[in-house]
Length: 137
Image (tube, rainbow, N blue to C red):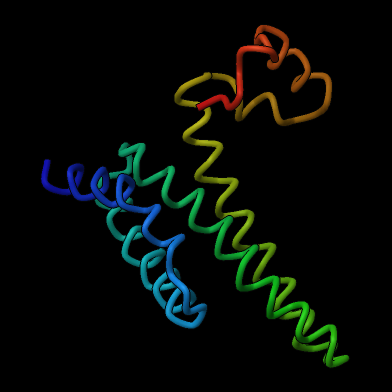
């Protein structure tokens, strides 16, 4: 019960992160937050706030920080660092997709199976009214 409340409070307060003016503080804070939320999610695997935070956190971290590392390596012509950053970004996005898939499948069963190919995905999406649905969560 305490853990569920902590995850809900963390999700409710997550927008405060967007106000951080120092990118180094944001980068360090995001990384440590991901580790902490991963631990909480392991203890409360059914908690949807944790799943959402991990989906959002891994996506944001990869896009804001790991891809920046990739761009800097690219600009330097450092092929080894570029490949390492690309691998890190791919793994972070795959992790986010994993959490997002679990969360989406809870609200709209069948998603995990629907992603097999374009035909199964079209069939799964068919019942949704595009004009009324901004997001599926």
